Length: 349
Image (cartoon, rainbow, N blue to C red; front, top):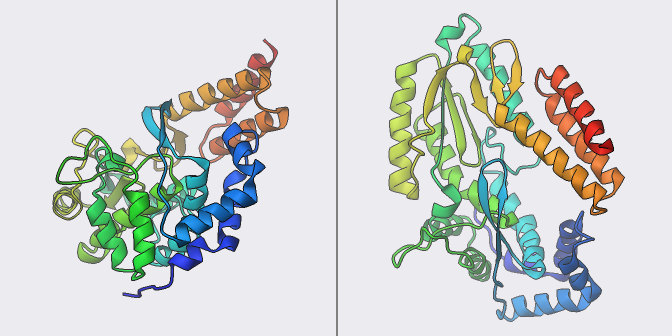
């Protein structure tokens, strides 16, 4: 395994910190905490650099709130100072692990994403089932409370295999240890905050262990993962049941994770495979009902924000085009027309 040294100073160098600021501030210029930080930008960045260099840096507290997307999620928002550092860490550390990730890991990676995942799934399921759709099965599952149950020591152990820089590990341990979920106890520190850019990176590093097990140990040919959701496809129903048991044991024994007991299904391709907001079928693809409802709900919210002068008309129109773009990946012409009509009705009511 390739290892890396001298990571810490690449993270904390001033050029990287200012680059991280530029990446972080996009679409956030109107937020008060961002404006306050920017008012004394050079002073704040230089102070962050000094604190890191002298090992005086301490991650600040999180602001906690809930969002509905579509299920309720508990978000923990770090300070601007800490989020700038998260971007700086991501820019240096992510490339070190990116080369180890499998092709069919689609979450939070350049050139991947939900649409690429759906295209890959659709293409492969079509190939497997081309001689008879009844012979194509898909196992779908996800991990129960994944972000709340990530074990800090296991995560740090995985990272240490690749990063041999003690100073960088001090910093990563500070970031990881800045948050403890309700799943922590006196023996184990657990949890990654939903909302941190670094949490997306750490999630991919952690679950790459699962990906490598499935692909290299179990020799599974058809496998896709997006964060904690994954699918395995096969022509053999019994094969999938066996793999489900093996995956469950690996997660429990190696990563201290548990499959969600109510979200494990094995379905025929012709019944429709629900993944990443879409339902993939042999000859077409539809949008998941919950996804449809979420799009209409979010668009209405954006119109309310526009009417309250919280966003510009340009931002509102961009939101509409974004949602219409989601619909282009499904057989949803009528739904697209319905969304546009509803948009103009809400805008003019």
